[in-house]
Length: 428
Ligand SMILES: Nc1ncnc2c1ncn2[C@@H]1O[C@H](COP(=O)(O)OP(=O)(O)OP(=O)(O)O)[C@@H](O)[C@H]1O
Ligand SMILES: [Mg+2]
Image 1 (cartoon, protein in one colour):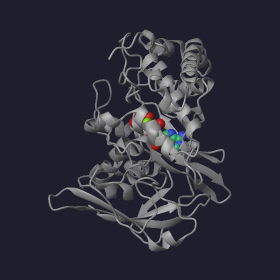
Image 2 (spheres, helix red, strand yellow; image 1 turned 180 degrees about the horizontal axis):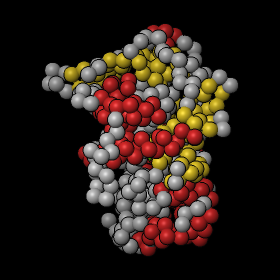
Image 3 (cartoon, rainbow, N blue to C red; image 1 turned 60 degrees about the vertical axis):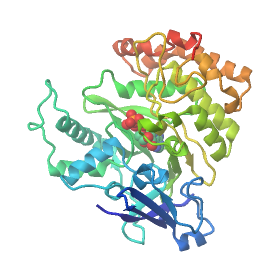
């Protein structure tokens, strides 16, 4: 287990790493992990230095310390691989015990945000050569092998029949383990930009790529600011390409935006104990603090919360919201990862985050209840809710069909949209 590393950063508008500081995870006397981060003197002396987290780790000479999140600061955790990437890296490592820093060091340089990690005080050159869309079929096959290897099912070949061998895992290590999220994905370069490719899984209940793409388009029609996307065919399946908003094409590679998840802004963990901090109402407070345009961003977050309620996106957890700083200022990121869920209940559905006075209830009265925190008047908030409701109701099916979602898949997801409980009287 590695216990320390250097933290590199790409400064606004630049394409090369500089060394920003040093990160150490040790055990305290009780055997609990303690993380320490300190900015380098040379970094602090730069006139263009920026903090890697302006709230928890502002530029300063002090040594920051945390015992939360297994000693990993939120900004660093956001740059770590998540469920999917960890799974691939663990496979690669075999029986070796990996610590948090090992995951950072073993994931490639395509992670979200502007940070990098390494054992040398001098940073490496950033990655210049990326996979192309034509490599996607191979990557999809490798992703399938990893999935099949771990979850043998009755219809599908057993683990021993399709076991991903070492070279295959080596290949997959190269294709994108450092982006977060649970679904299989890779990063590809296409038309002078970087995209996240999200693969359909064989066991998906509907064509996820098409449905997620349609939801992003629908959100855009409802006036939300969304990540650009398109669907490509990979072998005989579809995959979704989402354009990365944290990589800015530059004549000399890519400039990068710093990125912090809402989980980090909320100073929360992924665990259930921290569930009471998972809240749009708390998030908007943090957003107003960090954003260069608090009014616009608070309104945008409000729209997102309402839209998620109307498509029953119950997977709106705090890693599915972020703030980004392409330059010096922080803004709410475009919307990404929208999935409708055709829940059974017609009366009550809960989002992942608290919405208002009636908890996580995806409901108009609940959404309206804390309007002032979103810097809206009651009339403005009401208008936004009515408007998005009307658009989702009138447009979801037409948009889905136009974007290539089959009639059958539309039937499968239909229950997700504008469910009756959205307009029921809310009770505590
Ligand atoms: N367009 C984008 N530009 C930059 N980073 C992005 C973009 N879309 C997603 N990300 C980052 O990649 C992570 C994974 O993406 P996404 O949430 O779409 O995947 P997922 O596997 O569906 O996630 P989940 O586990 O929530 O189902 C996000 O949490 C976010 O940090
Ligand atoms: Mg996600």
